[in-house]
Image: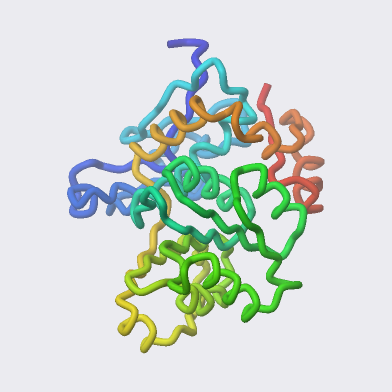
Length: 282
C-alpha cells in the first residue's frame, strides 16, 4: 500500500518462456533489467528504469517484497543485488554444517557470503582479499581466518589450510572477487569431492587457467551463477531481518547523499573509501 518501503527484483521476467520454465527467470528470453535496459524501450515508460530518480516504473513480471520496519534504508538497499546474489551462490553450491569454506574476495558480496556461510553452519570460513581493511571487516562478519593474498605466499596459505583440515583441503570455495587468477588457487585448495562456485567473473574474456587433471582426479564440482531468482531476494530480506543486529550491515553503506548531490556521490564512490555509497531520492 502507499507508504510501504519495498525492494524489488533486479529484473522482470515473463514466467512462461523456456528458461522461466527451467527455474531460471533471471535468464528469461524477454528479460528486462532495471538500470540496464535501453531508455527508448517503449515498455519502460519514459526511461524510469533505475534507482537514480524520484520515481521508477515497475514492470510486469517484477517481484516486490515489503521491507521490515527493523531494517534501515541503508541496510535494506543492497539486498536486491549483492545479498540476493550470494544467497543464490550458497543455495546453488550448497554449504553444509561442518564445512570448511573459503570466500575469495571481501567486498560487498564477499562480506555477505561470509555471514551466510557462518549461519549455514560452516565450521571454518576463510576470507581472502588484498585490502586489509576489508579483511578486518570480514572478521566482523564471521570469518574465522583472513588472508591477505598480497602479503602471504600462496604455498604458505595452502599449507596452513591443509593443517587446519586434516590434510584434506577446503570443502567449498565461493569466488566473488572478479579476479580470474584466483580460480587456479581454488582448484588447488579444494579437497577431493570439493565444490567451487564462480560468481564474480562477469566480464567477457575472463579466460580461466586451471589444471583439468586436478578437476577430474579430485572429482571437483564447478558451477557458475548470475543474478538470482525472486525467492532469493525474499530469503535475503529475511536473513537481514534475523541477523541485522548480529553483523555490521549498517556499515556497508558508509555514507548517503541526497539525489540532488548525485555527482558528489559518484565522486565519493570513486575514492573507494566506503564499501558502498548510498543515494536517497527524498
